[in-house]
Image 1: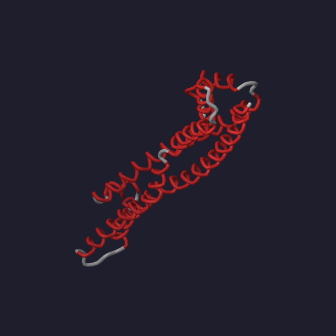
Image 2: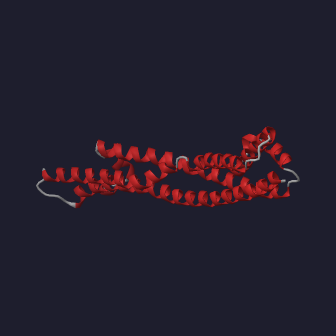
Image 3: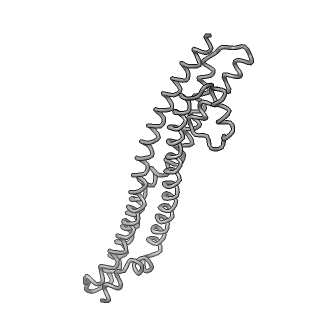
Length: 222
């Protein structure tokens, strides 16, 4: 019963050496931050995907580009990536018409700039998740190595060692690795999922840019 009590997770964390406790605290903090960004990016990407699908339907049903642009302007704070790409093209088109120019390439550049801004926003903090996924296991391993090293140093001063004396130190050390994996695995899964979703969304936006470019080019030629 005494060994079982000493091997409880809380007891092992409390009794761990200071470096191992620092590693555990660091990993727990990193894990909380990564979970924050996982939830936030999940909602952000889902909202972007939903707004993109909705705008595509509204775009092809719209009677005029002006009416569509006015609707976006009225709810600009809630506009999705494709809406902002379209709005950038429409604003540039209006400037072209007011100045008497017919340069489709400038409209395309305006769309590309808006596209890059939206992609940067969607990809923000993904590098943090990738870093957590790759580094957290090694930080946990460092805590494990330090804990095992302390255990063997303690055994050196004993005339005889039993499982009861070795187990707490080894278990304490392995908790650091477990916490490292707990932080890394969700971050890696989320990073791969978000990267895939963003790539699919990027393809839709690029296709829309091509379609809108062709549409506006026909309007400028007439």
